[in-house]
Length: 315
Image (tube, rainbow, N blue to C red; front, side, top):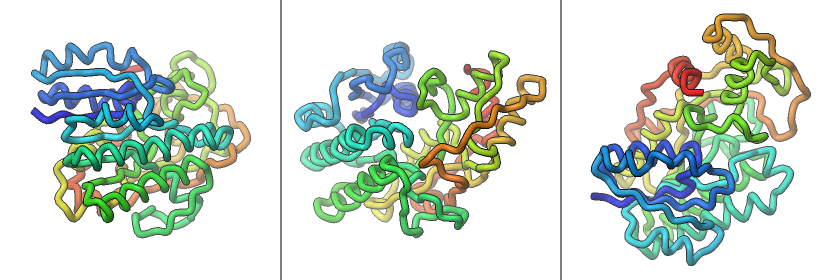
């Protein structure tokens, strides 16, 4: 039985990883300080472990503390590093606080993983590091040009992953997530992603708010595809080690189109409320996923529309 450390396991992405790992019979340790994650996301962890034959352990602590990171990594075979302050807007308002978690916390975990000689270190990075380049699709060979502290912090984290591979032989991989959505995504946070906010508003009969004209496009990634990418990364060969890979569906829709699809689920036409564009927001996003397909064996099998349907039914 392999032991997986999932940092930020109480979060949206982390808890979905925990569920799948436990269901297939792995041992899972979660490190989370619950600053952004929710304890309720792990309420069923013991049941998942019992059903799958795995084991679950929760370590409450902060990735900013190296000693805590060493305790968390001790004995682990794989580290799935999801812990972060995952908000562009929050990083704009508090660059120091988000940097401490997103950069210093990542370095702490890399040091601990290096010393423990883990089989794989997989870091959650972000498409935000591509910035405002008008070139589509975004591919991994493009020069990063982040326009927010969050994007810069993710670039720094994945650069550290590459360095730790080259300097110390740590088999580290960074995954550049593109607009992940799905069950357990918190619709109540002021920093919440757009899809749960839209769904919650529409179900309440209120207008969803779009910042800008709604013609901005996103390559939305359903959570099951992201979980798959993490698991495939743990099996990927040496050619992938030290690399960074786009994780998305390779298709894009506008926010106006998104509202239209959700309106179909609601059985009525939805008129959004348009608000001023927010600084740090990117206009268009589309991922080239060929590198992930080639080196990780990644195959996104849940379409955006199907993912939206599942998410609609879960909220």
